[in-house]
Amino acid sequence: MKVDATLTGDLAEVAGIAREKEEAGFSGLRRSETGHNPFLPLLLAAEHTTRIELCSSIAVAFARSPMTVAAEANDLQQFSRGRFTLGLGSQVRAHIERRFSMQWSHPASRMRDFVLALRAIWASWNSGEELRYEGEFYSHTLQPPLFNPGPNPFGAPRVVVAAVGPNMAKVAGEVGDGVLVHAFTTPRYLREVTLPAVTAGLELSGRRREDFEVFCPAFVVTGSTEAEIAAAARVVRRQLAFYGSTPAYRPVLEVQGQGELATRLHALSREGAWEQMGDLIDDDLLGAFAVVGPPDEVPGLLRERLDGVVDRLSFYAPYEADPGIWIPMLRQMRSG
Image (cartoon, rainbow, N blue to C red; front, side, top):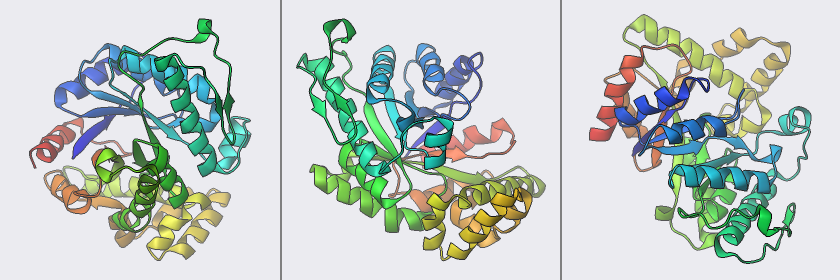
């Protein structure tokens, strides 16, 4: 199992952070699109590292066109000498329509079309053939030589798709090289919903599970003392409550027999009762989503729940913690 790191920091800091993560032995670096563009930090990371893999985890697909994403990803793939993976996510309707002022419809079908459009654009650049892509949502039929970057010596980037529901997971299996599992998931949901849908998609494309990677950010609640672990748990409970209040993520709680909790969390979120929401995540539900324990126990707990289920993971710890605890855990994961 590969272990990735999150590429944090602003543009002035990411080069040093990327070098540190590579030297520590992480397999990959992931950068998400929250308050900043995900591609610029990865460009700097590519410049200041030589081995570590790089992934946008995620870039919001429907805020862009396939052509603009194809160009950015192609440049990153070439500059990193083949180390870039394009991670795409759909986001949710309110963000696409009200934050990005873009179209929203049929997200799974639209994502499938988006990825196929990317692959057609890259194929045209690499083969020199005329670009003639006409899909359900996207059409790309104009590619003058001036705007064609030509063949990429490292080939087209790999594409992985973020998925929560089974429809998007099936699309990931059909047209992607991997699936980015949301942090708001459980081993049970992975086994009962996500992986069967991925398998159905792989069957459509005539590929095997061995041809595909499952990426998973794993919630970790840890600390050097019981007080630190308790403080970390409070933060993770609030994060889980925030995710659980989102209607699109309700099926994850339903698989855990907690559909009514999703209703309560959504109602409280509309009132802004964030602290109260976290109190509704009891120990059993916390343990379903997160591994909880001292640092020396975390690697064994992660392997116990995710070995044979995911191909690569990252530690998801949305709280302040001693940076020194993560490297020994990484070494334990790698040696195990």
